[in-house]
Length: 150
Image (cartoon, rainbow, N blue to C red; front, side, top):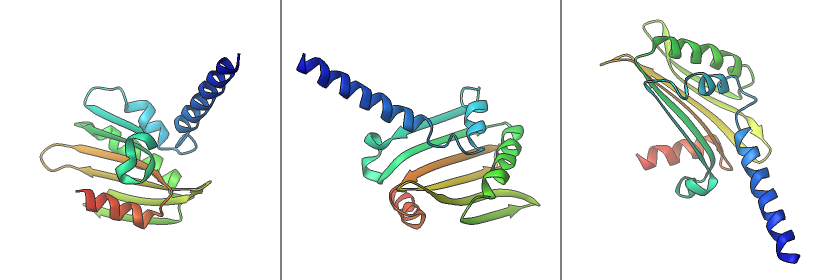
């Protein structure tokens, strides 16, 4: 009986943790980008939790790369406009009158700093990248980690 209770508690904790990760960016408009394009042709979506991210000190990572789809970039920029309203820090790069890169530092959620990175390149084909990261480190530390790993 004791073993059964331990397993039941363990399974409950695992499911609870999984549910928290599924809702990591659900309060953000960019979640619609992942939902709409995540399983489409020419899209690659990656989602990782803390266990897989030990070397990066992230608690959650989700990204999508979409090629040859101009609608996806426009859709993502519109979603980012909404999320930008609550951001603590916003940096943008404009190329030929269109925002090509965006960096958003969002308000903390609990103990986690949140960061959104967006880039769309039109050289040698169209490629859009959207990244959402949560970490216990602030966004400047997150960027240092990303740049160091390259």
